[in-house]
Amino acid sequence: MVYVLCVGIMCVSALIGKKIAKIVVLRDEFYKLIVVFCDYLKTNISMYRMKTNELIDGFVKNYPSQFDKIFIGFKKCIGAVNNELQLTEIGFLKTSEIQEIKNFLLQLGTSDEANQIAAIENFKQVISYRTELCKKSRNIKEGLIFKISLAIGSVICILII
Amino acid sequence: MLNNLLPEVLLNAMRRFDQNKITELRLRRNCPVVMNYFGKNIMLTSSDGQSVYCNKDMIDFVVRRGTENSLYAYNHQIKQGFITACGGIRIGIAGESVNSDNFLPKTIKDICSINIRIPHEVINCSAVAFKFIYSQGQIKNTLIVSPPGAGKTTYLRDIARKISEIRDKVINVLVVDERYEIASCLNGSAMLNVGKFADIVSGASKKYAFTNGVRALRPDVIITDELADEEDIEACMYAINSGVKVVASVHGDSLAQLKSKQSFNKVLNENYFERIVVLSDKNGPGFCKAIFNENLNCIYF
Image (cartoon, rainbow over all chains, first blue to last red; front, side):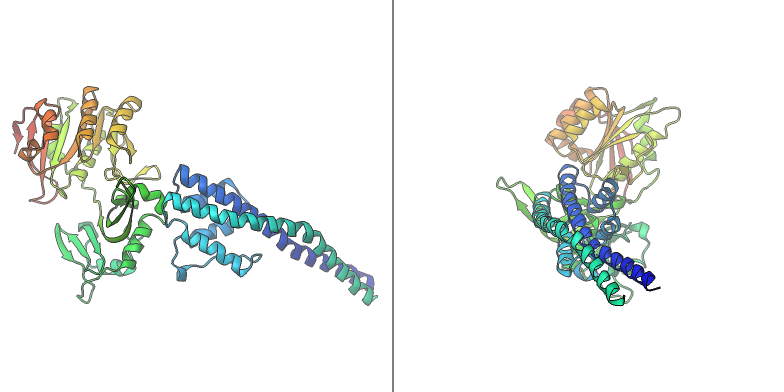
């Protein structure tokens, strides 16, 4: 009975570890996709001058991912006045990071081509730097968090036994 | 289509009116909103009888909705002073022009007033003139002379439709829609009906559209709006000399006024246009006042 409990505790701690580690993984993958999104915006605005709604729909179609719902949620933000804006909850991002994305989306579609491309380029630079940080963080933390949670589970099992 | 474009305060005030009779809505900052209703300009009032006043937010709202939150996509139109919104609605813009070093406009900022022109399809409005435009089994080169607001674009659209309805014939029409007024294409689809056999070139200059259209699309008839300058007229002459029929419009209120324009001397003297239809707005828009043949003799009055 005790051993069954210990196995259960180890499984739960493994699950918890994986879930916490997933945040780091999601951050890394999300920011990589945002960099691709910026390039997509730049190309389609200069070449085809596609409208912002079409840009989002086209991106989701051409680059399907686990973040599709978030990108569809971005459509509601574009052109909204501040008090109308409700960005989708993105659980793995900090409030300041969500605000940064909000500010970028609010200004999308509010200026001519040259200024719009410049704004996208600026945002891409910020996000590229963040992508580097997230990649380093993932390399270190992904395995570590899982091991720590297993270790905590083991300690609890030892204490029980 | 207006529901997506106008703010709630304007939509509420307009509910009391017949939407099919509203042709224009003028919004000027800090001034009462003016509406063209049944051909008359009246101030828009709310249900309590008070005039509805326009402010900066209202204009910004309409421009944002009209451009679908994509100003960069519409900058080429904004530079020319208009935006074509969904449903063929044309929004004329007045504001401060931001010019480049050689004084060519780059964009318009601080928009102070807009004129929202609402198109209404009037089926068969060109019935009277069409009997003269299509005769002996052929479309005649036609010039529609009309003052502003007299319905020449609606007329041209109806002519394009009627050409596609000619029995037992497929006549290929090229619609050169430089300012997105005739067909109002959006995302590749015509918002306004120009018939089953129409190819539409939107946003291009008449010179480009005529030259490349004649070569690549091989139309039987080209329909275009507002011949403004020598370049437009030369494009028409090129098409007519290539054997393509042209139906075009020009601003003016009479044949005499047209003759006084130097740029039209050559086309009138050399009988390029076989029919000249003069429209008037005195008995309502689209009223055909007179029709002349290539020798400038009146054949209908």
